[in-house]
Length: 317
View 1: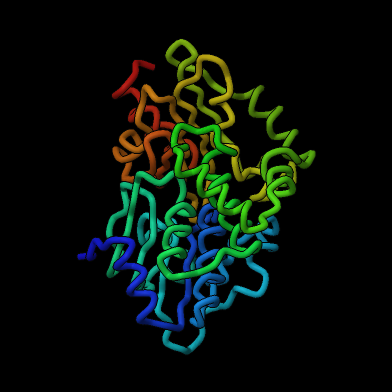
View 2 (view 1 turned 60 degrees about the horizontal axis):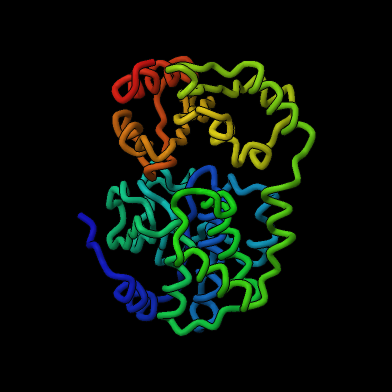
């Protein structure tokens, strides 16, 4: 049973311990990477030994923010922390049984896998609470910390387009910029530039997308064969889950993929009229009201059937 603690208690814990190994989640995104990197740099700034676990699924896009910070688990005794990880099943491959002492998260569905948990679902991104935590630790923001936090917050809010954005989100961004963060190149890299394989994927998705409920539900799938044929990388599909939500009238966007072990991964993005986390919870998943996910056995066909059944409970397909 986890102990639910305040952010001040989390800061006190970090002050009283040392030799940290910080864990991101599987298929890492900007929030988990940026949060881990910022926390690692902050802990080092107050004299702590800290490393980010070298998640084998880190992609080249995140390399600049992790430079000099990563380490594989060695024989030493680490105090393990996780950032933006909602459940043990989402810990990196090879770290599934890690004894996590402190989980820092913003998912209301956090299952309490760590010995101590601070989870604040009111935060738009885990990066927001990391900023406040660093302040409690007396860390002065640097350009590098600011840029890592900006990656965290901007990516989890869709460059501030999603409904999770609050005034606190913009205060976080202001602090990053004041610390020297150069946000233009980050915005361009994460939200503007696309490789040609990504454009080919978008064309394929438009052609093969299925619509239900009078166009209010859109279901797309990315077969593994297509990933290989188009030479797509994980960076190419980092933000693809909400692709069909940009279509007029679509309120529930479903993206399906085949992932490790032949499982089917479901990513759901919804309008304010539906709760993605509640829908995915029916399949053992979770997330946020506007963005959630789940994984089922049986690849894309089983995932399609499972999510269709779950959606049919809230809207007639």
